[in-house]
Amino acid sequence: MKAIILFGHGARDARWREPFDRLAALWKAQYPDALVQLAFLEMMQPSLEDAVATLSSAGASEIVVVPVFFGQGGHLRNDFPVLLDACQEKFPQVALSATLAVGEDEDVLQAIIDFGYRAFSL
Image (cartoon, rainbow, N blue to C red; front, side, top):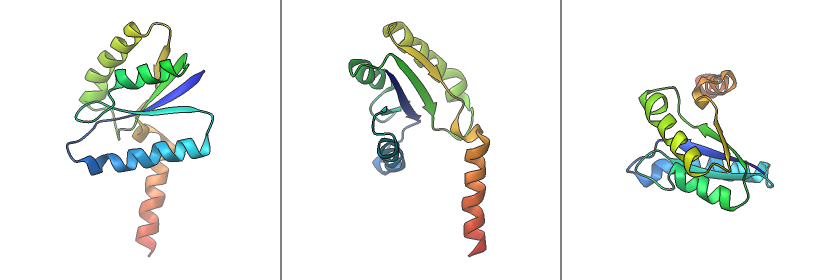
């Protein structure tokens, strides 16, 4: 069974998490049969390892991690691969992979342009 982890940075302010919770809820509403979990690099829970453990326990054998970051900063270039490798080592029965940061996708960038244009056009 395939699953997805929406992976964010995390923050001290609990309100920062609200868009991530909405994103996960939208995912579940549109794809109710798909397994989805949030995970955070730091300051928030669950961790990437905890999210992989939850999905593995739910029967996931393949997990795609989607970094919900605007770009490939130091955390994604340096910290994230180490975390992903550690999870792969701890959960060898699960095939783990990752996408680019969402902000590097042309459709996501276009959605931001469209959002800005709507505000500009008011």
